[in-house]
Amino acid sequence: MCFVLLFLNTFEQKISSMPFEKLKPQIQDILSNSKSSVESRLTEVCEVLEQNIPYYDWVGFYFKNGDKNELKLKAFAGEPTDHTIIPFGKGICGQVALSNQNFVVPDVKAQDNYIACSIFVKAEIVIPLFVNGENLGQIDIDSHTADPFSKEDELFLEFVNAEVAKILE
Ligand code: SME
Image (cartoon, rainbow, N blue to C red; front, side):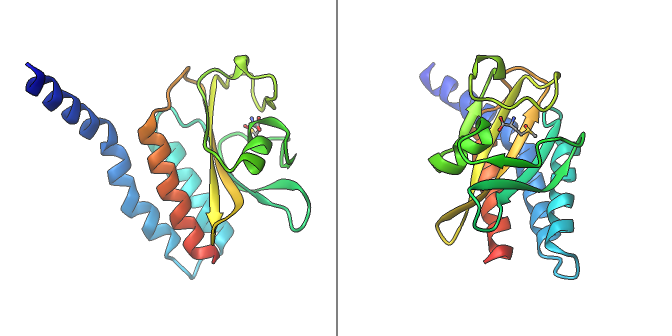
């Protein structure tokens, strides 16, 4: 019985990580195209994620804005946002700029320090992007689905950020 459950669990994990495994080489291809600007490559990555993962409704990359303690939106897919500049400490993004930790928000309504970009957003995930060990940016995903993110998303987005870091070093 235990064995069967273990098997089912492993099987379930394999199934749930399948779209991510398929997307990984695609992300690497996009990022390795040195003929295209970094901004265009990042935009393409955002588009691929937004189009292929049904519960990713807005995908963007924010980066530290020069020597200012604020984030600046560099690339995105989805509806344009007013929040192209976010001070460190403000909102989910600004908190991640300071904490260096993944921030998974299953229900945005439960957060006090949250900046709303659209009334349709129910959940958000922000993963810091480290370049040579320094938290220089982040990938931010908004979802119109409640509580959609799992550990698989975190691992996948950490992979995406590590690949992006390689072209920024
Ligand atoms: N919700 C974010 C702001 C960025 S938008 O999601 C595009 C936050 O609270 O930091």
